[in-house]
Image 1 (cartoon, rainbow, N blue to C red):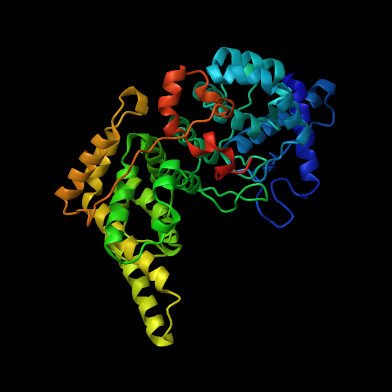
Image 2: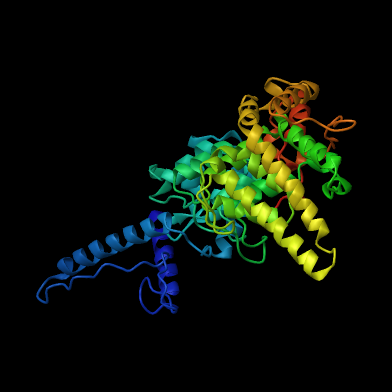
Length: 457
């Protein structure tokens, strides 16, 4: 099987080379890691026999295969070069693979790969779609096996976490979409980049894995049900502080921990974090801003500047505050000069954002300690929402923040279950029925509601 797969991979490389002219160099002069430069081949002696001619050729081919395998497994590969027929065969055998991935059984997976490698590898690497399916079922042990690639059943192949899938996203995007923290940590340890963006027609373009986590968190039912559209366009009044405090209370619920943990982990490995935060602020996305501020507040405190926010030697919150104030000032100047009020809504959103930044700057560290104290799975230690409300309110009061007027009410936040949810999320089908309904409230949006996931698949 190994020899046959190498022959197929070499044929693929040759077909790619036809479009490049020189090995490793594309027609526009850019380096292509899928086809790196081949080593020079030493000429055989003219008077040598056939065996002497074959030996150096075989040695050169072995070196070439090793270079191809290493380059394709360790570099950023865009786009996916897997032929459609290979993925088609994978989907044909997927019903047999899924039970193995659900159990995360390494020995069964290796036996399956050894028997079905033609559908799971191409061009000296394990296909991006194979890794994608492993991630979908959160098979962390199987993922580690294919990322390392040392087992003989893999025939020298391994998976590249930075190889784009045919859908236009990378492995970290999928793991972020599912909020699989352990999988994300594994991918990062094996070289996955948190700074690769989506592209293509099958997925929203220009998204970082961080964006996927923040967007999906912002679509959580708790936030959608409690912060309705009329509340998301608050006026500059007493409603502002109540809106902010209610938002913070919801984000501090145990069910939200997995979403904030995911966002925090990705933010830690994302370059230009303040730039991404500034984009949410400029767009008036208060919930997105709150999710990123609260989850990554520790990292933000250690940052000094961002391109979008201007050069500054202040810590991150000072930089963000200056950025918001500058934008508010610019809007006021435009309004005074033009004598018009179309920018008033944007100004009000910036006013709310400024208050949000102030609250998290003051109380963020204490809130972060409380959020981290929640169990990873809410059903392990059920905490009443009223108890969380009381604790968070006390933290906010200790830092000088009080609700105004009638105060705030996070209400009865219960997820409306549907019998067909069992068919949507395979990972929770193995849990007991009682535990299933307890954790369903906290199930990632990308799992319960695929249409609302920020990754189109």
